[in-house]
Length: 361
Image (cartoon, rainbow, N blue to C red; front, side, top):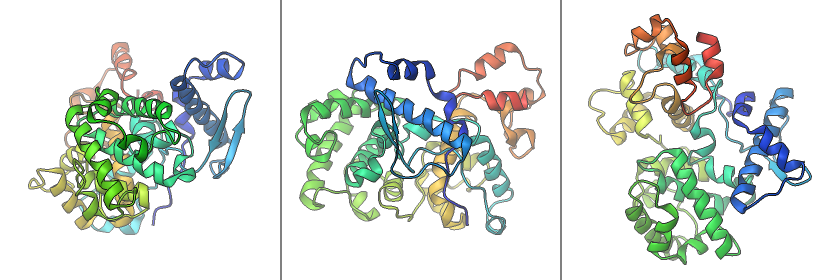
């Protein structure tokens, strides 16, 4: 059985060290959003240092004291190192699935994708370090809202909307971004905070109705079963299973988004009949051991966001193409040569790909 995900030393590549240094040395924090960002970056930088010394050294409740920032470092830091497939688990399922999975695990350890800090599961903790441990109920609510906003919206845009809600509700309500504060907003007010996400008008309606349902039917908390969760307006099985996994620790299904659906079809992990994410979920669950159900979404989503992106090939830095595990690999890219323009383009992806570029190019 795979062990729990741990924090990668490579997460430090995206920190803005100069900005952190300026703040800690006395530069002014101009607004609440800036302070939130600085806290996030300070946490990430310190986590990198601790991981370089000993990956197991960070424990729940540890803290970092600085002149300006006190950041709780706890076990819910967004990970990008995933356990590999146990040999005994690879016997069932499509050909080479475990080899593909394990190669992606190795690649994901070398870059920090948007999903690792701005994905729905990790976002509440990124915005408020330690929230999942300090206030699980508020974490579940923010997780639900992030999931409801995520449909047809990039993680980075969704993250900005969540920051807007956190900042705005923090000024309006003593408890900040919580169910009670959100339920006091009109649909128009909700929409003003989330106006950059896809289908924001409809989502504002869904959120307003959901808040009232949670208060009247579920004692102000999130349901802990898939049947009740998918009754909430605008919430489908993908959101529901991710909510159960991260919010309640209940691993009852796979959250299948567009990246996982697309790549599972590409690698023939599902049949051509799996034409929707829900059909894909059912087929995956029929053979994938349950202990991988919670990891497969963030693992594959990060890979799909950065390496195997929908409208461009990055096969020249992908182990699957180089090891002939992906029949769809772009052979022209694999043959090279690699120009400086190509390297420059790779560096404009949604993650710092320096480690993969140095390894393969």
